[in-house]
Image (cartoon, rainbow, N blue to C red; front, side, top):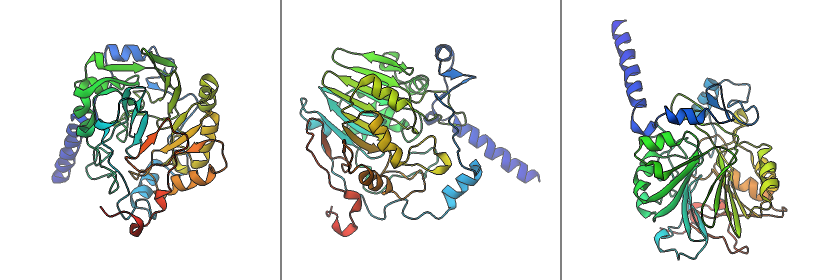
Length: 370
């Protein structure tokens, strides 16, 4: 019994020490917390969604859901072969070219009207605090922080591990002018050495204005947290508004009325990047199904849709290629374009005629040899 108690005590102490390592960031405190308390979206010590949003929505409890996720039999949740990709040299893109380059999942590089930015850059092999867990698919982790040029902005939609990556952010710090994010996420950034001048924290329905563009912080339907405490920082979507282009960054979100409200507020959106993977009936309010993605694009008055949050990590039980397959099929007769580039391929933002092949249908024999 003494040996068991000592062992358990050591495990608990090790766990507590591990939670104090820098990659977990830290919670807001002092003036940070006082500013957060003024937000109408912060109640009872936590940020709240606009509508009730339980994280677990099925009949099964959390432990049952996690046991099924970890040990249940779910075929084809990751590809059995390296996915196709192309490594565009980001530093050699002409400064007057308007492009978007997807890195898989929810990370992408954007150059628009001479402004360079990254969204939710996760350039590590894993997206989890547990080593060896949530590992990227073969062929998908082709970019490193060293490949990224000087940046005007990094936009962070929320602080989950598959959107806010400590090693990546540390390496990008010296080449990033500003990090734009929701309230509370700045606590992590300050803990990691970012300066006050680099951090722009916003509440929903606030905006950051520059000479020829605006960045609007808007609602999403999700949750936040990097450790054992949830919803101490804000999750958000963002709209980049340029004189001749509007780009919506949906972040992680379940379907909700916020899409219609954003569509009514901003008119037609040229390109919407929407959460299109890692859905499940057990958490149906915090991620959207392919059918809901199509409806969200309609609500937003989107001229084009880029389905993201797929094709790099397994965080749900659906087949890895199901989101792109179903969204492409469901959107076949819609009046907006669906963009499905391979990782690293240039999306030409000024070219409405650009097309992409259904690469997720490839078999290993059809892929080009490396």
